[in-house]
Amino acid sequence: MKKRSTFALLAIIIAGLVIFLWQNHTPASEVNNGSTPPKQSFNKKQYSTTDPTSIWVVVNKQHQLNPVDYAPSDLVVPNIPLRVPGNESMQVRKVTATALEQMFAAAKQQGIDLMLSSGYRSYAYQVSLYNGYVQTQGQATADTQSARPGYSEHQTGFAADIEPVSKECEVDPCFGTTPEGIWLAANAYKYGFIIRYTAADQKITGYEAEPWHIRYVGTALSTELHSTGVQTLEQFFGISGGAVYK
Image (cartoon, rainbow, N blue to C red; front, side, top):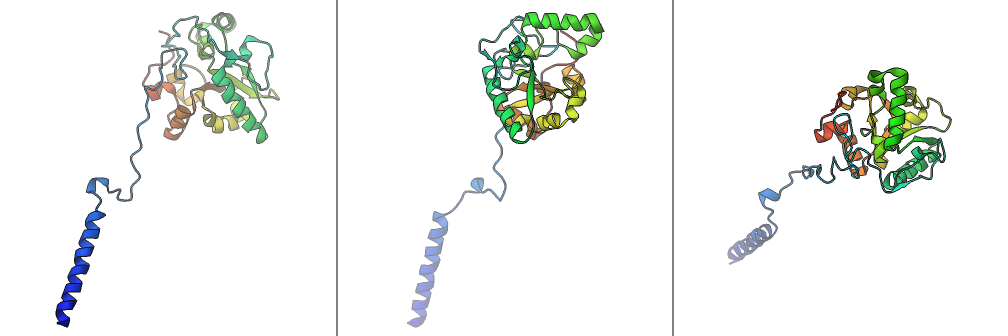
């Protein structure tokens, strides 16, 4: 009798265990196996790369602004140190201004004093600037340093040239070796900016290195570029670039 009771108790325990396992069964398709869930792919279609109002618009020697004399409707003067107060070029798009103010404040807290050297440039302004380079340096050299009218990121209001308040290495390649330039290269992406023109990517962007030239693209894209190690908008979006004007 005692032996039967033992078998009965064992049967009850086994039955209970089977029910428990069945109720808590996880389908094989849902088993993680200790791995990280697959990362969702970045949506490269979220914003236009051709609309001049888009934060992802790609402007280079192969892709002219349309219309060629486009002018943003929400230009503002950011509340940051300005190289030439009152000048047209001290304006940027509103979203760019907000990001610049946040970045400059963060830099200030770390002992880095930045200043806006140049922001928005109208089509007419770019005509004057580019023609000046052509007259003094020749068109071939000018095309490596300044965009032709209608092909300039500055015309979008999303680009900004940055320099130290001290004006050390002002709009000069040596800016990249200053504390301000080093800080900018390491931290710009946190505020939605990228260093648009680097020495390694001159054949892609069509321009010499400009460590002072930043471009607002939003934090989602700037973080994605930073994490993937992709340097240019052309590479990321698969868009043509280079030194030859179209």
